[in-house]
Every structure is written in C-alpha cells, then in structure tokens.
Length: 368
Image 1 (cartoon, rainbow, N blue to C red):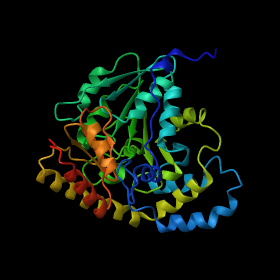
Image 2 (image 1 turned 60 degrees about the vertical axis):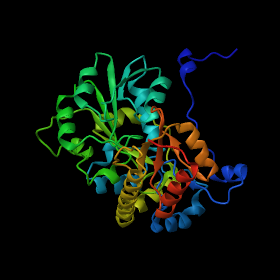
Image 3 (image 1 turned 30 degrees about the vertical axis):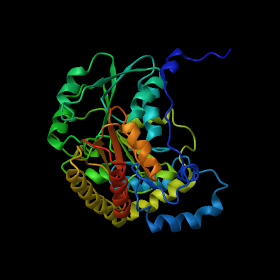
Image 4 (image 1 turned 120 degrees about the vertical axis):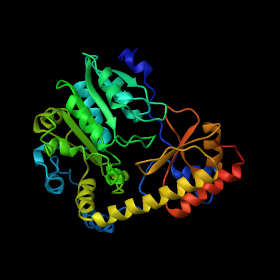
C-alpha cells in the first residue's frame, strides 16, 4: 500500500466549476452567463490578441525560463529592480512557493477568517499549521487583532487586500501602522490580485513598502503578489508575479520550477502592460456595474457587502439552493467559501448583470 503524509487526510481538493459548455449541454440551455470566477468580462487588450496571433509559430519552443522581456517591462512599469520580481503560473503558484519555503516543519500561517481559500490549502500541503483570526461583526478586519495573534511559531501572515470573497480592504493609515509594528521574523504576504480595482479608493500600494517610499516605515519582510488574471483579462494564460527585496526572491527562486510561466503568457503580459487604457476602461466599467448592483440589491432589500473588487458578496436564505436554481436559469455564481448563506457574484457586462437580477427575481425566494 502506498504511503503518504497523514496531514493530507484533512485536505479537500479545490473543486472548480463545470465548463460553461458542459452546463449548457446538461441543462439544455442556449445561453449561460458566468459570474462566478471574478474574470474580466471585457476580455483582454486587442494588442494582446494580435501579439499571440503573431507568436503561435514558436509554441514548439520552451519559454524563456527567466522571463527576460517581461521582467524588464514590469521592472520599468513598477519602478523596481528586475531581481526583485518572481513570476508564477498565476500568483497562486507563488503562494504555493511561499508555503513550501516558509511553512514546512510545522510552522504557522496566520490569516483572517474568510480569506482566499488557497492560503489554508497550501499551508496544509506544506505540512504547516494555520490559524484564522476572527472578523469583526461587520465583516471588517482588525489589523491590531492580527498583531495580537502572532506567536513564536508564526512564520507567514497572508492578507488579501482586497479580500476575496468579502470585498473588504484595509486602508492606508491602518496598514502603515500594522507594517510598522510587524515583527522582523515574520513574512507578510500582501495579496493584491484586485489592486487595479481598488487603488483609487484609499487602499495602500503594497509595493511602496518595498520601494521604501515612506521613510517613516522601517524595512520589513514583505512580498506583494499581483496577477494578470483579473483587470488585465489573462486568466486563461495563468501568469502572476511577486515583488520583494532581493533576498526573499532569491530564496523563492530555489523552489520555482523551470519554465513555470508559458511562452504565450509572457508575451501577452508584456503587451497587456502597454495598454493601460484597456485596464482603465475595465475598472471604470466595473465601477458602473458595482453601482448597479448596489442599487438593485437595495431595491430588493438584499443584504450585501460594499466591495473594492470586481465581485460582491450577498446574503440569501439558502445559498446552495439558490446557487443551484440560478444554474438552471443559466446564471453561474459561487457560494462564498466560509460564509453560510452568502453567495458571491462577479460584476459582468451590463446585460449580464441585468440577466442575473432577472434570474434572481424569477426564483421567488425571499432574500435577506
């Protein structure tokens, strides 16, 4: 009989949703609206599409293992040194690298309740431990409470800012104070997957802690994670990155797999960076969609949480039942992991958002 570590007994694999085409086939639906995965509903930049078309003749070759051109473009765009960047097959892969390096041998991760589900998963896979810091009654996150929970065993703190699925984000001043008080022997992971949607709303730019913009904030062990999957619209190509001081990047590079980011993803990311007009358009349209959701939820007296991302968490009487009924109506949302009787809906195009509310109304459920 094969042997494996006993801690794997407690791990539940991440379960992805069904492909849209399969759902259409199973339920006999002509049209399905996917508002489940916080993707950019407007696709990606036309520059990206044209660059990929030009590059398909080289897909028989391995990608650049060091992502030279993307590293150069991103370092210039972010005003950091090339050696301060690490790339991953999505920022998820970098989260996994962090866990393997800093959470093995039973070391501890801290994160808030309701954080991105992958933090729990990678902590377990690495053979580490984790503790979840409770949220406040209004679903906000008290960073001082996080500081109080740090123990001698704490090695990593994960903070997704904004948070998926609640949409909550801590603001600059409270985050600055938190960083000042952070112990030097703890790695702070600031996951900014939704940064582009939040940056105009008083949310800190975590990379400034690495750039050392504010001399009043001492240097700490911090890595900031971002992705091209959300506002840039490259979710299907899986490319993300981390920014940290060189010493941290050098450690993580020891566990990075060769050729971990693919050829087309690197090309697409370089082109995506050039088209900030597309990113700005996506963010502006998301703001319009957000206001529509707020208005429509309030009309129906549905409790929701204001969001800094491209998704909204809202309360229903039976989340699993309404999720399944919405599927039958051709609308895919997602139960909010860690929150009973809450669903998370991504903000889509206007016509998709309207279809969602029509489907919700047609169910005849009392939502509260």
